[in-house]
Amino acid sequence: MKRKIKGINMKRIKENYVTIILILIVLVFNVAAFSSYIKNVKSNLADQTESHINDILDEVVEGVNSKLEEQMNTMQTLALFAATLGEGEENYKDIKSVFAVQKDKVGLESIEIVGLDAIGRESNINYTEASYFNDALKGKTVMSDILSGNKVTHIAFATPIYYNENEDVDAVLVATIDAKTFYDFIDISAFNKNGKTFVVKKDGTLVSKSEELSAASRISEIFPESKYEKLLINNMNSKKSGIIEYESESSKRYIGYSKLQYNKWYVVSILSSNSVKVNIGDMTLDVIILGIEIGIMIIFLVAYLIYTFVVVKKKSDINLERYFIISKHSDDIVFDYSCLKDTMYCNENWEANFGYKLPTQNVKDVIADFVFEEDKNLYNENIEKLTSLKEAVKFECRILDSEKKPQRCLIKMFAIGKNKKKIIKVVGVIEKLNV
Image 1 (cartoon, rainbow, N blue to C red):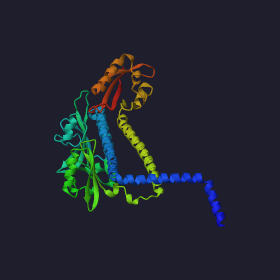
Image 2: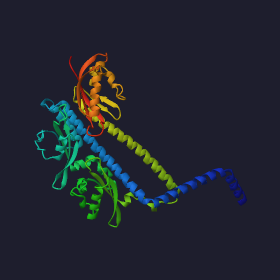
Image 3: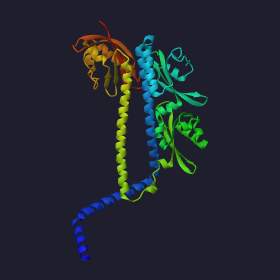
Image 4: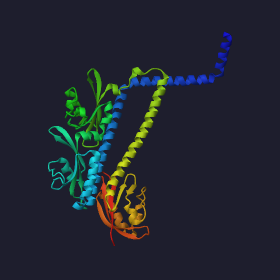
C-alpha cells in the first residue's frame, strides 16, 4: 500500500514538474525580492524617513498654495468686476451683492473698496498705516498678517482697482479674515493626523494654528527647548525646506518646514517617529506580505490619480466661477482667455449680439478672423501692446456678425499677471456701440 501511494505521488510529481519548478522559481524570486526590500529598508531608513516627511510637507504646501492662489485670483477678479461696473453709486448695489456672496463663501470678516483717501467705503476705517493698502496702491496684489500686540489676529488681502484706462491705481479692494477662520480656509487640519501642522513667519510668529494652539503666538511656546526654535528660525532664513530631529519624552520627533509661495511664510509640521518611520520589526519573510504591499501601492497609485483628477477639476471650477461672477452682472460681452491653455470662455451676450458662438479652444490662430479686415491692423497693434507692455488697452473696432456685416464695438482688455514675467490670462469687456 505504501509503495502504491509512493508510486502515485512520484507519478504526479513527474506529471507536474514543470508547474512545480515554475512555482518554486516564483517563490524564490518573491523571497529574494522581499529580502532585498528589507535589506534596503534597513540600510536606507534615514533617507526613506526624510523622503516620507518631505512628501507630507509637499502635500500640505501644495494644498495651502492652491487655497491662497484661489483667493488672490478671486480678489483680482472682484476688483476687475468693480472696475468694469465703475465707481458710480448706481452700480454699487450689484458690487456689494457680489462681495456678500464671496464673504459668506470664504468666511471673510470684511470686504470693501478703499479710496485713495485711505477711507473704507463701508467701514470708514482709515487704512493709511496699513502696509497691505500701501502695497496695493503700488499695483500689487498682496496678503498680509494683522497683529494685535505680538499675536496674529487677522489676515488681510488687498488688490488694486483701475477705473480708468491709465496705469494709476484708483482704489483698493481690501478683505480681512480672522486667524481661526483662515486656518479652516486653508484646510491644514486635514493633515494634523501626522502631527501638529501650522503656518509660521520667518521670525517665529505663528500665523495660523489649530484651536489647541490658539493661545500661542510664537513657536517658542510649542517647542520644549529654545534651541530648537533658534535652529528652526536660522534654517528658515537660509533654506526653503528641511528637517530637524529632536528628542522629546524619550521618543524621537521631527520638525519639517517648507516655504510657501507667498510672503516668505513657512508650513511647519511636528511629527513623531512612529508616524513616519518604517517599522522593520513588523516585516517577516512571508511572501504574502510582499503581495499585500504591492497591492497597497497599486491602490495608492489609483487613489493618487483620482486625487489628481479632482484637483484639476477643482481648478477648472474655480476659473469658471471667477468668470461667472463677472458675466452674471454685466449686460456687455465678457470674456476670459487663458494664455497657457489657449482656451476662452465668453458669456451668452456674444451670441445675442453677433448671432454665432465663439470657439472655446485653439483660439489664438482664429480670433482675428472675426475682426473687420480694415480694422485688423488696429486690433493687432492693441494685442501687441497688451502682450508686450502688459498694459490694459481700450479701443474701438468693428467685429463681423453672422452675416459678415461689421458692427462697431468698444473693446477693453486687461492682462492678469502683469506683475509677473508673463501674462497668464486676458479678461475683457466688449460693448456694442449704436451706429
